[in-house]
Length: 226
Image (cartoon, rainbow, N blue to C red; front, side, top):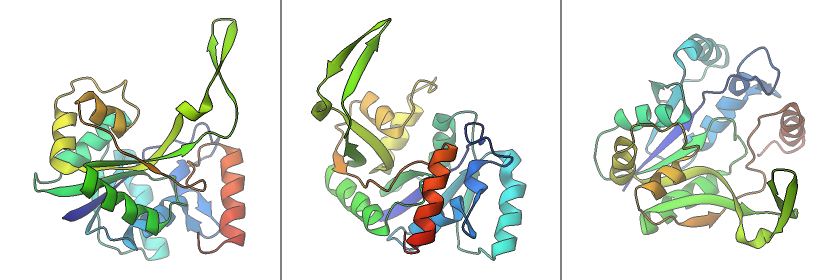
């Protein structure tokens, strides 16, 4: 079955406090977004789609020319929310039978093996959502009090989140206001489809804050293969 990777890169960099969108920040010589795209290029994906805000297209063009990035991919204009951005990308695809993996552009440390595993699991189960166990104790905060919760009953979800294309596309089309949906798994679940979790990777974190960036710089400096 055809395998399609969608990389969503719509961050503004506000929480990072950076002058440029976080996906374009240089990480030891290679922009974060390019590192992420390279993982999908090296994977078993047959097609690659990049989703960017319209006001970031010029930045992307400059980066491509500067580093000589010429891998084949389709660029789709994103929307005001992540939901709208993913929906735009799905609408740009045909309704053929395929598996689609949707990934955050600022998670550059996903392994190629994990991307391939996500495709394989989704092909068998209809969906495959990367998730990891919690390490710390957790509490539910209610007004001025809190309650301890069993961390074994919770998971932290990551991307890629991978699904059969026709069903995911239909799930997105059926929703008029997607502002409340922060990931694709929630959209899939809302449509009534069963969700299959797979074990993710600890290093597959989202670069959002300055602390994340410092960790990412260290990882890329001392582990050139990540």
